[in-house]
Image (cartoon, rainbow over all chains, first blue to last red; front, top):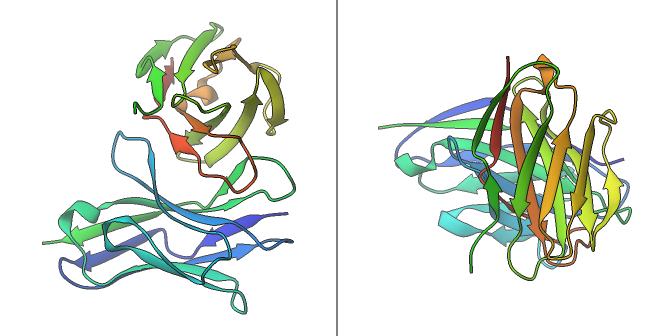
Length: 114
Length: 114
């Protein structure tokens, strides 16, 4: 079965400093992994997707994530936080047993301090 | 291209009533999935429709049902509403609904059950 664990429920950083949001996954298969972002009262927006083509995945708005199979991790990073990055971030794994449903982590709320 | 559209954005109902939520996918997308988001349970998969057929279902009671029309628009119905059904209901569409494919989310319908 697929699952993801987001290790921090809340992360607070100062504007201009690096962001690290941690995610570990569990999957019986080589997984498809995603990071989505949710701003208040908005739907989910895809940041990036890993599908085994490259272990370092670049996404939108300067975010990137590195897939590490040995550590079963897929951490999200950004070199320099911006105020507009304040939101809820979800690490997501896709069910590769043929079904098109997503398994979401519990989310990490990112606060950016000016 | 227009994104995923969910209507209405907000709903207030009382216990015992039923409710119908609507989702219009991105043009050309054939798969529509529904998710429930609550503070306690996070984001959970409800069901997925593809070519007017329910293809996959999450672990929700039979009070939750849905359907998809020939134009790929989908509706979700909840009968005999309970207080615990208060949630943000998100709809997502994808092109073919293959496992690992990208799902695009609407802004959601926030349902409050009084």
